[in-house]
Length: 405
Ligand SMILES: *[C@@H]1O[C@H](CO)[C@@H](O)[C@H](O)[C@H]1NC(C)=O
Ligand SMILES: *[C@@H]1O[C@H](CO)[C@@H](O)[C@H](O)[C@H]1NC(C)=O
Ligand SMILES: [Zn+2]
Image 1 (tube, helix red, strand yellow):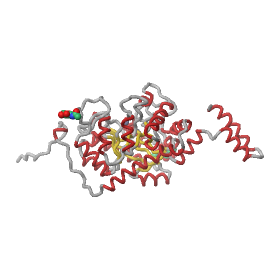
Image 2 (image 1 turned 90 degrees about the vertical axis):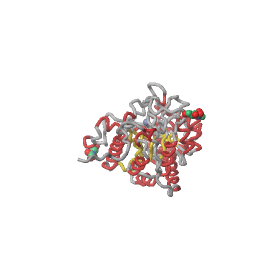
Image 3 (image 1 turned 180 degrees about the vertical axis):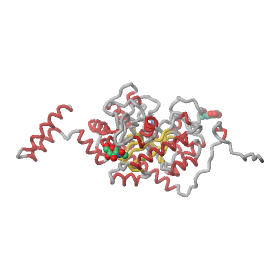
Image 4 (image 1 turned 120 degrees about the vertical axis):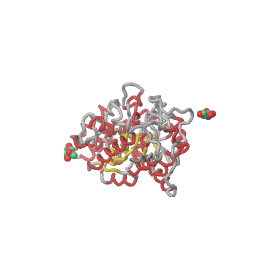
């Protein structure tokens, strides 16, 4: 099918020079069809992508010890993300994850998170292609300036060390979203992964402090991200949050039954919350096999659309979060490929414009509106009970014993 189109397209070229050029061109166009590839690129030019999750900051830590002076982000080897490929992929806004390993929980997670925020802030201020943004208004303005807008998102609630003041200070540094867990439970929320057996609680997937975290995020205007949380936690948050929430990089459990994916029952609750699921491209999550194809990813889009509609769907590619991406979707330059596939599957341009950026802007705007409604609420002084976080790295504050010399 596609090779036939190519042949027909090729034959259009000489037509241009003929006397009845205009007629011939439009005739050729009619015969060959305006290819899905062209349509995908045109659509992305008109509605450039807002992507929910990218892990380049983690790669900068692993490969370059965050030393930006030693590299050029325009072209980077051994990673899936650089400026030239973001441009080729029509990425206009990228939510950059700041992530630290679960092993840092109750140790130096806060410092490591600050260092990841620093590297994203440096990346997004030292390169004129990027612009650091913190609101929907700034996203729109950066699109008009042809910039790639950077949003900062904390991946894993262990980054705040069970402290609302720490959460607020992260907000001050520009963080506008946080996933409540990564692969470890926190003292107040539960992970979808059983990789670390820490903070195990039965039937208490969002503690009273966990609800205070969600409340404070609602008050600040920080998007609550449920990717990586357990179904119990996601259910509790969907019931509790005053603002819409997102799954920044998760796919459909009905299509591939991986614990990182979202079951239909939760999708229905997400729709009621007016939230968003941003489809993850990572191979093992989309095909449940070693190898994945573009069609596997498209199956997730089709299924979620059938269940809750295109107005609840976004894209969270998860590039640089792992090494196994579908054939044809290996890096951030490849977004047009999935759009092309969805066009082939009869997704309308209106649906795809929603998926590419309008849904995310609507959700973030609603989060901002809830913040504005809560403007008279004071910062929460809720503290986690000490017995829920007691550990040797947490100083118990008490009067110092002064020794006279
Ligand atoms: C990175 O490389 C591009 C060309 O590929 C060049 O224009 C730019 O000045 C370089 N930036 C830095 C910070 O070295
Ligand atoms: C939840 O767990 C507590 C003990 O931790 C128990 O008393 C309670 O009955 C449980 N509730 C449900 C609904 O299972
Ligand atoms: Zn992740």
